[in-house]
Each structure stands twice: as structure tokens, then as C-alpha cells.
Image (cartoon, rainbow, N blue to C red; front, side, top):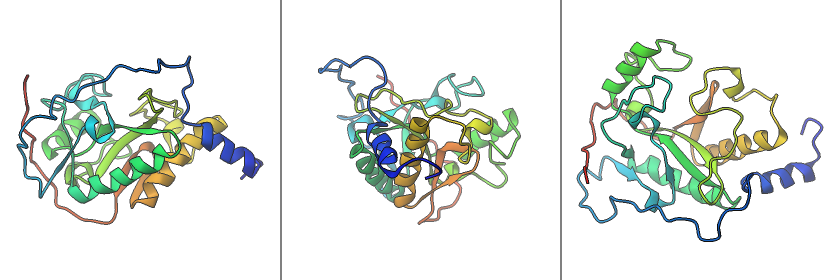
Length: 224
């Protein structure tokens, strides 16, 4: 454990998803899912939509301007994965719940035309996959995510999402024991269900137990 005792390591894992700030209200506000009573409007044999009613916190950065290109890439915020990938992620959700954590999802399936837009903004293969090759996101096989406490408050993972620098790399260790334990918890839970990380991004994982072609499909939008 590189100098850390086994008992201390498991203690850190145990407390790593507890709230860091002042205690939350015992009756946190309920966030309602506007899609819960609507008709399914996509092919469920090809896709599964991930929503807050599935127990996730959803924050689709590319449906807003709060992302590294400062431009909304998606016309509306709906999160999709291939069905078997979504089932595997559900098992990850259940794993981290045992450590008093939840999953916050930033990006899932990404239509290939959006990949071209991102590449034009940042043509750096360390951070954006060349659309000529195609990203695992474009296949519905990749997910970008982080950990929250049980109230949905995002936890410190050492860097923000989409941080371009060595501090976001999987092998970067100049972080607190707490942050390193959270990264290990997320990575271990994902890997246990068939996902694989990449070197430069602690938040990105691709499902390795299936293969799908590149997709251009764009989900329909719902306007209330």
C-alpha cells in the first residue's frame, strides 16, 4: 500500500463518500424526472436511456455551455447507452452504493457528428478521439462519470471533469489519500463490471465486453 496501513486504507474507503461540507437537511429536495410519465420514443432494442429515476445524478455537460469548448453540443439533455452497457453500469451503481456513494453521469452516447465538432475545437488525440477513427462514446460504449455522496453532492476527485493536465491522469498520485481512495473506488467498481479506464482521464470508462458500430443517431428532444 506504499506506506499506508491496510486498516487505514479501508477506513478511508469507508468514509470517502461521506459529505465534506456541513450536514445536509434530513429531507433533501426531490428532483422530479420529467420523462417518467412519457411514452418511450426510441428503439429500446438498441438503446437504454439513463435518468434520475434509475438512481443516477445526471449533469450532461455537452448539452450546456459548461464544458471545455464553451458550446452546447447537444440540442437537449438525454443520456443513452447500449442496453448491455446500461445494465453493467447499473451494477456499478449498486456497488458504489455500498460505500455510501452515487454515480453522477456527464456524458454517454455521443452522435458521431458531435465528435467532428469537438475535434475541430480540440484536435488533440490525448483528449478528443479523432472522428475518423471514432470514439467509444460514438458506439454507445463509453461513459464519463464521477462520485457523489448519497445526497447527490459531487465529491472532490482532484480535478474537475474534462481537466486537461497530468493531475487528471489515472497514474497521478500527488493527491490526498481521500481523493486517491475515491478514484480507486470508482475505477475498481467500473473494472469489476467490464469497463476499462484510459490513461489521461479519471472519469472516462469504456465497456469491453461488447462491440458496436459507430452511430450517427440523434435522440429526439422533448420540450415541456
